[in-house]
Length: 352
Ligand code: NAD
Ligand code: DAU
Image (cartoon, rainbow, N blue to C red; front, side):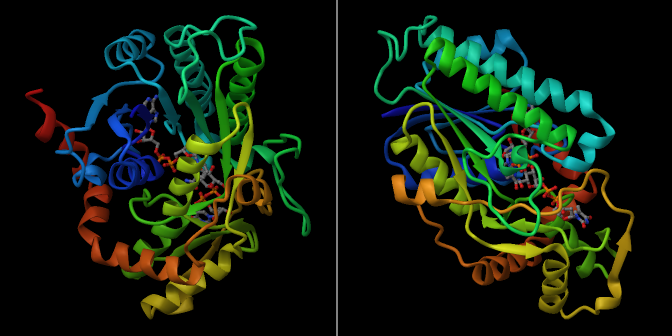
């Protein structure tokens, strides 16, 4: 039975992962979700699990050493899945410092607590206290590899070459995780996934933003020429891949995660307009993002051949379901755009 610490479990992928684990994995004894509830954290993503006896929410910051240490002592975690991060590239261009402290120092704080609690000593690979199932999983991103030209794909051995403050902070965190493995023998894995889409994504990111604007007949802001390419994966396929790495990943290894699904941004925008029956005149080309990566593409050979994971969703099915989810959950989006979702914590947890 597993005692799991999930960080950032109130965000987009984290909340999908918490739901995925509690509904699909019978070996979860306890799942603690540590989340600071920044603007991106929304407990309304988790209403389906909030009464599950195995689930506990803790509002707190991954950079708060005392709190993180206390949680390890109190709950005796054997697994850490680290999602918590500042995740939006455009915001990182405006406010790099926040990205460096959250994404780098936050990662180190967690690693230190896990190292102490798991009694891992320098050079003591998988030390005497190493138990079957003790694992620290760093949720990283394909953006650490930088940008591709018209050909080629990112493999796990592609050199790190991040271009934005966000991706530089994620690459730095990856290197620290690697160093804790090499130096102390921390039982780690790093996963690097391509762009996710699906329910509960904050409407600052391309797909939910475009659905929201199209529905409201507002302009759809396409950066530059709209020909940048992203490799899209349904969030539930990402969650299943992380669960697979937790179960079968070889300690110390990096696994790329992607679904071989490259699309230019403008294709996605046109598809959304067509699905909603809205005119292409809503498309508005705007100033490009500085340092905008032209193309990402993941080579998923390692995880598919060595661990047997494969995506379930086709993009055609996934994007339709996703568009319908946002149309069926207009209230969820409205509560974000009006800021009402920020009151949910106070309402639900003020007496705890
Ligand atoms: P998100 O922005 O939707 O969620 C981030 C969560 O982290 C929020 O709930 C937020 O409250 C929490 N958080 C932020 N700072 C915190 C802190 N200091 N302490 C505790 N909690 C804090 O992000 P997401 O899109 O769900 O991404 C989750 C992870 O997956 C990130 O590490 C990101 O780099 C990675 N990732 C994302 C994608 C993608 O397409 N969205 C793809 C690959 C990897
Ligand atoms: O590749 C994985 C990464 O994908 C994750 O690590 C990041 O956390 C996640 O935010 C995402 O980064 P992107 O920058 O690719 O996602 P975003 O949704 O911000 O943008 C997708 C593409 O769409 C990108 O080329 C920029 C473009 N774009 C985005 C927005 C918000 C627009 O043209 N207009 C927009 O308004």
